[in-house]
Length: 418
Image 1 (cartoon, one colour):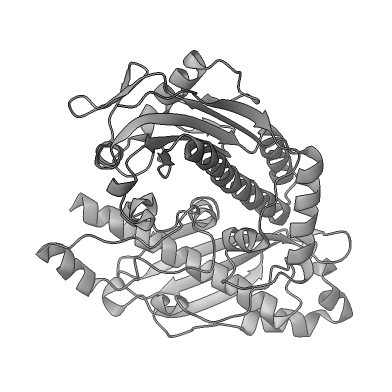
Image 2 (cartoon, rainbow, N blue to C red; image 1 turned 180 degrees about the vertical axis):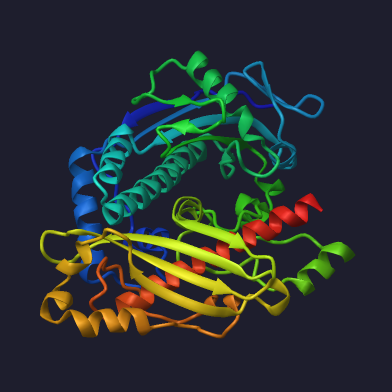
């Protein structure tokens, strides 16, 4: 084993972070190549401006003092971790050391996002949340690039990072990793970071990672084969960089796939994390005795004029049974009880009757199976109001995709139980 003449430890904050527009658009859930317009462009611009003034993105990286692969564990500075996937990668690459990395978008973004949610500004909240996620991605990439530059000078190669919560690395080991990093560091973290008992970091927009180091360039497979995404089955993950390469299915799994009526690997137009949150917070599902499904979704938005008045609409959808393919039988959209925000929409002020009739009468995909929402081509429209048809169609898409996502998760849970 060759000795390293210089060990690296770097920490600091960045004055600015240049998140690529296409990365931000991807996290917002728009299709590839889409250019933001109207209110979406305004929200994205104001979010960038706020973060440029108030955000404090930071990074920390330190090479471990000791590293070994005894038995079935990974030992870093005397602390053992269990990850078969990471251990195999390090072993096959002939890794002789690792670098511990922590990055974060800073507590300012999380505090401001919490305030936006409390002020009932879901659009502003969502755009900030996704921008903070983009910041974390960029910091991990930027830190990896800096490590690669350092490693090149010492005739080494840096392997792609791996984090607790990735396949075959229990997120429950995240507290141990953070404790190790804090205990053995020489330079302090540029920002406060803690981990809950659940393994979740606080602030949430943070990441702990391990980068492997090797001198053996010849042992490395193609870099794409080392991307963890290809071995991660969590489809809605907002950090996905490559398609999941599903392992061969057993006969039972193949039968289940053939009989599945919902696309379990659907390419939603909405970010997966948003779908997960909406399914928990805004959607209610109830299965009737005949197998039909009643769904109620609450949409909270704001008008595009009159200083952005809050408004709320309820979407009621009735689906046929699973055996029938979840056909969309009934659809209804109407203002939520007690809502007055819709009366401040510009089209409502001009003439309320045509607008409300259009909202009540539009029933996209009516009579079709719920799975038809996958691949449904419609123009993204981030406006919170209901004044134009494209905006109303966009919201119906959000509702039906959330219902689709929730039912897929429900079926997966039932299949696992069986």
